[in-house]
Structures are given as structure tokens and as C-alpha cells.
Image (cartoon, rainbow, N blue to C red):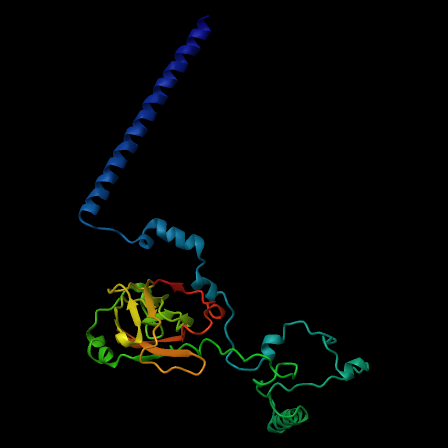
Length: 331
């Protein structure tokens, strides 16, 4: 009984001492956190922001993730000054026999004599090598000839035309540069100068692209109005504006659009309306009237010409045979 009470008293004394030391350590840690918080608040108030890679964490991250290239480069053997390659291969194991993937006639016949290639060819051996190359070219009928666009790889005539690469077809058809804007307003224009467009700005596309590049109405009925949507997409990284020169009323063509700037990468829609009329147009022997016109679209970088093609059928022609056009009839 006395022994148990002694152990209990001793346990309580140790627990009280442990609690006191624990509270002291916690109070000290809390005071350190308060001091550190004051330092951080003062730095934020005065806008003193240290660089990450100059701190201890940043330096530790660099040394832990990326090896020290300077120490690795110092461990490399010194580069010899002489260009002789025998110094590199003196310690390398030498092969007693060669086994080529595609054996020559000498290997196939079982001959062990292999031609040796000198390390530094003399003028005589160099002349022999060049003579051998020229004889090989003569045997194969000269150098490599470019492929023909008239025949395919099998030598048969091509059924379809060869598709030109995009680098050749990169220029926009039906367009001319807007020299007035490029000479007067382009040098003083406010441009985008962010990091995302730094470098290579001269190779980036600019201006608008028309989708489709031409408007084909097809066969139309006289006295009806047809409409085709055309998309104008800004393919550059500058905000661009445009204006459409409306055709004369005698052509029956009208362009409906919303004026204003178009942001980079965005697109706007043009509605090209055509009223099928034959007044003042030349009639063919088949009772058809052909309409061709170019709509002038003036942009900041160039002037686009949108071709409009249509075939108007007169009323006395058999209309049901030609009414296969998917266009919308608005009136």
C-alpha cells in the first residue's frame, strides 16, 4: 500500500514536470510564429518580396532536382589536342570478325580478307574514292532525279492532280495589300507587345480569312432573293477592322454585316443577298443569265475581293429541273 502510493506520487510529479516543459516549448514556438508573422507583414507593407530561388527552399529545390552540371563537366576526361582517333580506341575491345547485316559477295563466298580504310586518306586514296563514286553514279544513271508530277511512283499516269503544299498555297487569293494603311497608319499603330507574341512577329499571319473564299449561288429562279453566309475570321493577334463597299443596286447584290472591330481569333458573319433579276444583263441562247461580281472588302492590311457567281434562269425555262440548290429563298 505504501509502495503504490509512492509510485503514484512519483508519476504525478513527473507528469507535472512534463506538462510544464511542454507548455514552455509551445509558448516559445508561438512567440516565434508571432515574430515571423510581424516580419512578413512588414515586408508585405513595404513590398519587399524576396526571390524564390535565392531563398533556402529554392536553393534546396534546385540542388535536389537538377544535378550540378559544373561538377559533372569537371569529372569528364580532358579532350585531346591531336585529332588522331587511335587514342580513343586504344583501350576499346577489338572485334576479331565482322558480321555485316547485308553480306557482300566477298562475305558470302567465305572470304576473310576485308578492305581496310585508312585513317587519314592520302591524295591518291582520295582520288580512288572519288573515282569509285563517279563510277557508281554512272552505273545508276547519274544522281537522284526528282519525281515527275505526270506519273506516280509506279510509273503509271496520275489520275488526280498533285496537291501543292501549304507553304506554296499560303498566299491569299483575290487580295491586294492595302498600301495606304501600310504606309500611313502602320508605323504609328499601337500594337500588342506582350510576352506571348515576343519574337517571330513577322512570320505570324495577319488580317482576315474568308470562309468560303467565293460565293457560288448556282442556278437561281428569277424574281427570288437568295442569301449565303460568309464568315470573316481574324487570324492575327491584333484587333482589326473592316468595311464593305456595297455593290451598285443594278447588280441585285447586297451585303448585310455588323460594323466594328473584330478581336484576335474571333469571327464575324456577312450575309450576301442576291436578288435574281435579269434587267440590263445579257441573255444566253439557253435562257440563262450569268452574274459575276467581286465584293470589295477593305481591311487594315489588305483589300479582299469576294467573287460572287450565279446563274439566273428565266421564267419560261423548266424551273423544276434546276431547283436543286440548297440556298435559302427569303422572298
